[in-house]
Length: 117
Image: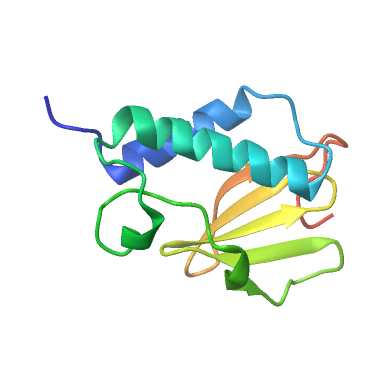
């Protein structure tokens, strides 16, 4: 049986995030996304986790902490992954954008607001 595509796996990450309680901080949001992404990839990618092979193994990984970019607003942390920008709000919100800056997922923080309040 073939493994789901990256797009299908990413959709599953988003689905699972929506089923979780909203995060209260950027740190909690990071951990929620990291745990969810790892769980989905462990279950559905067929590729063992090996961050040194992120460029070639076909598995999705969290952005590295050293990939942080200039944030668009105070209280926002922005990271570049291979195919997306990931923004974390101090309120626990997560916004994932494609490389053209279009939002592909917007998870509100515990205060009910998005990353860019």
